[in-house]
Length: 500
Ligand code: ADP
Image (cartoon, rainbow, N blue to C red; front, side):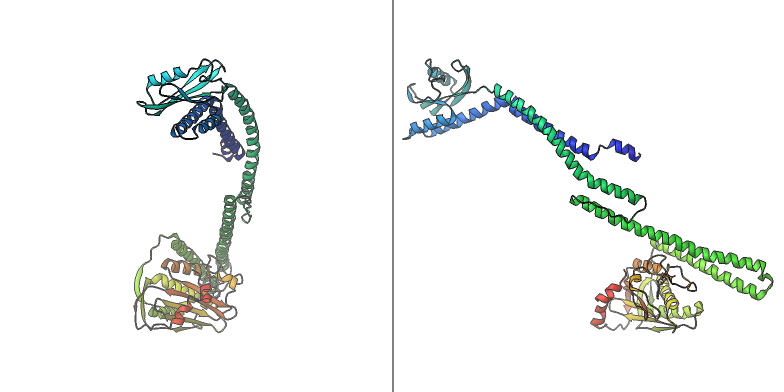
């Protein structure tokens, strides 16, 4: 579905908020209409009945007390009702007339005895009903109850309370409600407009920034002022932008580096092949020189392709580690001997400072590669004295391997980068055969093993790359290292060096 089609399907935030407001207003209106117009009469009558009943309970409860007359006067005034208390022979004991004879108890044609008779006939402890009052031309609420019990009554309570016609009131409410609903509709439209503006503006801003990001400007800063959620979204997007930007830069570097590293040997291969064809084909000395260069460049290419393959396999995650047990001291000295023999760099001085024999358990081939890469780098970058130091340090929980050189060292701001793929210092010399992948492979292997590793370097003096093999099987004659030295790994200085 295209963006535009989706836009059409989803109403804008403004419309949505307005719809919710209108829905809420309609709901309030319907509720008010039912309570104030439709149910008003029933509501009013129900409340009146509750009032009368409560008054009757109070009157019955205080019957015969000293200031009973006072209580009756107060109750009838408070509740707008006429009250008669009649004894069991039908004689009026108390009579409170506040309706000026306009009730059916105190009007000239009093219906008191009729009410009483009806009550006795029904035989309940209380009854209430509506009757038409011709004097006021409206309904009146008639209530009768007994003091004592129905079988042996002490007295009877007779109450009349006028029921005000609510029809007129309801029609006033109706008109008021229509005005209120009009005002509410206007108000909710205005409020929803401003609310939507407040919510939508930062979102629109973020959308604009996201569009810019989509077109390649990853360094854009997302603004999300207003409320927490939007602020968080903006921060996350800004962070995502930075990350994408890094990946993008790395990808560009990668393409640049790979194409550079592939193109140079390829160009040289072609050039020297042409030279053999056109010039040196008949001159065995020159031809051999040129063929030597072709072989070197082919090696360089093979190295790059191999490193790329190794790294992609390691990073792909489907390569399992092949654990085996071996003596790390022996492995280190073997590698040094073999390196000297195979690399042709016999004039370099690789000194090995071993510790006691110790058996470790890890992937020997991969750890070999780590040591080889680190020694190779140390050789490549060491100083004019051509010295490289390899150290084995046995610790209670690991074997630490350190490979140091006396070269120019690495600037503090570059330390983090050297383990990145394809990173090579800007001023690296072409004669240093390398792919920029050696340390990435080291990192991937050590990470896969779960070993700590790092580098500390001081510019002008040299660098020391280290890693710690944690899987010790048989520490043979390992001396317990002094506590201080062990702590040193976790000291602030070293912690800074830890790359993992
Ligand atoms: P390569 O050595 O093929 O360039 P690496 O991944 O092994 O690639 O190293 C990356 C970068 O780290 C090198 O280009 C170099 O700048 C730096 N580096 C690695 N080892 C050392 C070292 N021992 N001394 C100084 N710089 C080093």
